[in-house]
Length: 171
Length: 171
Image (cartoon, rainbow over the protein chains, first blue to last red):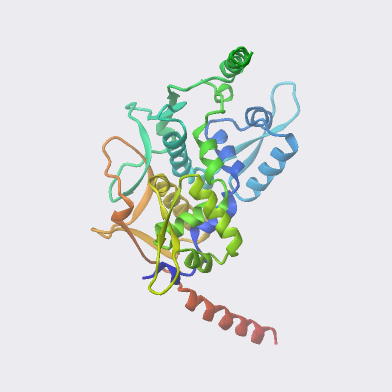
């Protein structure tokens, strides 16, 4: 059948993008999947203004991607963390797929992180498959540092070095 | 290692979303993957203004996702079609992942289309895998109509019927 005749009003890709089509949605999921779920931690790691982050988290909670769960550190007032729901974890293959695509086309085969199977250490990838194929749950996957890995601390030191060299070169 | 200390400046997910983070990018890829590659066909099937479509196609061609190839129908002037590149096909698992997520959460298990392996007819899915797993190339996958499938023609007739019923109900 000719694809041009196919009605697109109930297209699942369109519906998916209606919810997660904005850039920051998948970045928030990346954080939450990696255990960063508290407002202050998200704010700092994503370097995003508090008001925008609050609005985004509220929208995604309403959409069903996050569950807002109260917690209280000793001596502090009650706060909330944002736990990814089953609906959110359904996007795990999409996030892994974006990660490998980004590494292939923009990181020159020198990824900052590698995903490996927790039990075997074998490289993990997102793939299109059929039939009886063992699918890895997110809990069976861990990341390890790749060739271009940096902590924030390391990165903060590095640009200064490069800036100094550039200045020397220009002088 | 604590994810909060990980530097995100070379994160492949961020880099991927810098290119495909806008909703329409994946919708254009959906069309191109299904063989709709000519400007007029894209314009009509996506129901998008010509100027926006031209801009989007130019941006994605510059980004390396489409190759602009001239063609000429008999008696007509030269036109162009937009062929997805290897870089674009690298997003195939992401698109399949979005499709199954959209069907799971927004189409009530009644998908408009199903993807099946061309040779066996087995259902196809996007998955996170490791080791020796047979990965399907896009050419090994075809779609078939699912329970909520409509052609555009069928959809055009359907709402009128429903509207008529609603009017009767209200009267």
